[in-house]
Amino acid sequence: MAMSTSSSEIGSNTIGDWSRRWNPLAQGRNIEMGERLFRAAQDRACELHWFTEGRISNEFRARHSLLTLHIWFLHKRLLKEDDLWLQEEVFDILWNDSKSRIRAVDGIHELTVNKHLKDVQQVTFQHCTHLDHVTTLPLGSKERMEELCAAIWIHILLKRDGETESPEITEQVIRRMAAYVEYQYDNIVHKLPLEHFKEGRVA
Image (cartoon, rainbow, N blue to C red; front, top):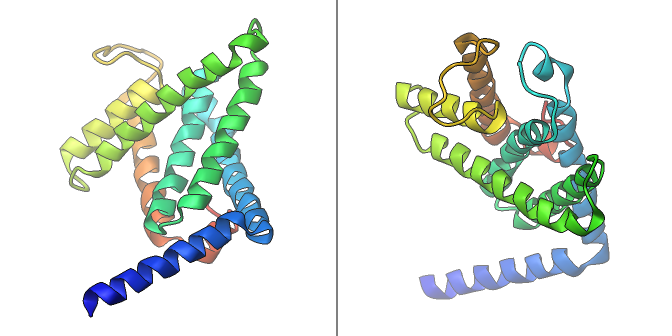
């Protein structure tokens, strides 16, 4: 009986997923929600304070890493909601946006855009994987804080692993950013009401 119920549920979920993926109205809603979520992440990643008090570089990779961080928050919430189609839509928008930003960089030839996009995707996944690892460590532990600070140091501040000196970036700056990441992770993934999340109200 349990196996029969499970099979029925799987079949129902599959039909629902298929309908959402191929139904034009459902596709339109998915695109709209994906755009809304992406723009919310983009707006937060473009705030001026990151490049002043945050001491983050204004060049392409640093700005992309900030965007990646805020997309990662969405990714973790969408995993929690088991919304793989919307997650796919958000990443599709990210890659299209990345292509546009690559094309805007001086000296980039159109024939090399796809190659540069693959490089961007690789560093994006490395960044997300590092953040995923941080969340496996005990909340509030010294180990978790140190690993999160390392992720920020390497992927957002773009410092080499093992590099310890950077006069313009103090420990206070890094720890303040780490506290922000922990707060937003907890808020967006665990506390934010679903209706607010899908409206893009994730600030």
